[in-house]
Length: 68
Image 1 (spheres, helix red, strand yellow):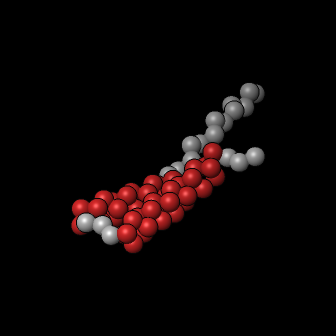
Image 2 (cartoon, one colour; image 1 turned 45 degrees about the horizontal axis):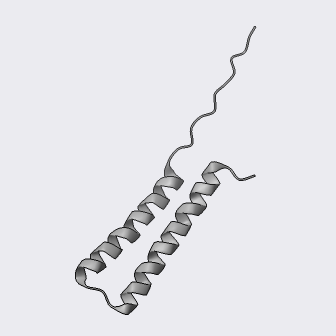
Image 3 (cartoon, one colour; image 1 turned 120 degrees about the horizontal axis):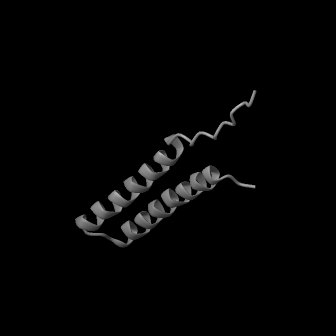
């Protein structure tokens, strides 16, 4: 099966692709400077999420104590 880390990495990559695609689509239709700024913020935000997902340390597994 897939781990939650793999799902988060794929989901963040899809988010970057989707936000970039939508920004490019609407840019081709014509946008105002305010819309350009919003699109840039959306793309940069999704890239930030993707980087954070990949860099964030995984939680450590609990270690069992050795009973002597």
